[in-house]
Amino acid sequence: DVKVTQSSRYLVKRTGEKVFLECVQDMDHENMFWYRQDPGLGLRLIYFSYDVKMKEKGDIPEGYSVSREKKERFSLILESASTNQTSMYLCASGTSGGGDTQYFGPGTRLTVL
Amino acid sequence: KQEVTQIPAALSVPEGENLVLNCSFTDSAIYNLQWFRQDPGKGLTSLLLIQSSQREQTSGRLNASLDKSSGRSTLYIAASQPGDSATYLCAVMFSGGYNKLIFGAGTRLAVHP
Image 1 (cartoon, helix red, strand yellow):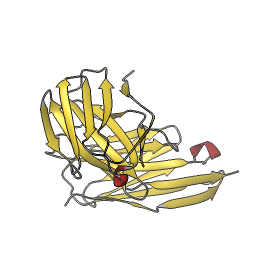
Image 2 (tube, chains in turn blue, red; image 1 turned 90 degrees about the horizontal axis):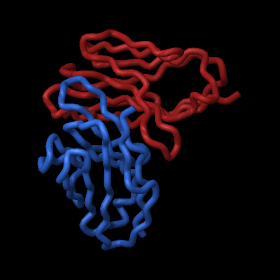
Image 3 (tube, each protein chain N blue to C red; image 1 turned 180 degrees about the vertical axis):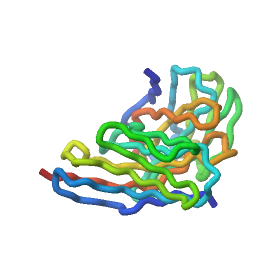
């Protein structure tokens, strides 16, 4: 079974803190993705990576950065957390072949106070 | 701009009803379309994946159809049960985009006994 794990299920941080969200996949997938999910807006892509050390901006990259030093691990970084970054964050991975599905982690519910 | 729209946003039905969830998308150049289920506070579970060359997929009481030319997909749930209560998300993998998924905002389904 494909497994995508996220470092925390729930996280509470204060405004201005630097926040790291970690995602690990065990299927040797080339592609990894970070989404945020907000009520009524669905999932929106923040950043994705198609190879180690490679990254591309998604639809809402402002306020975020990412790191992919190893193929299995993709980190989302909030340089200075703000209250409008309170959200559910979902990580996913998939192959580079056109037409394959993505596999999702359980999500991290982040609250910024 | 590539967009995915789901109608209705919410649906409440009595147990046993057959129901249809709708998804529309703006560009017919797609790799695939996927339906996910999400339970409250949880990650995404893939239900059905339809490749661009296919017209439909079936799994148990679920049937999903795809009409690329009109930019539409429907998810049909037969004989609904309370355990079907969840949010259903439609996601499209458009061609030429690093296998990114574009999500609709979801349909929140409640099946009452």
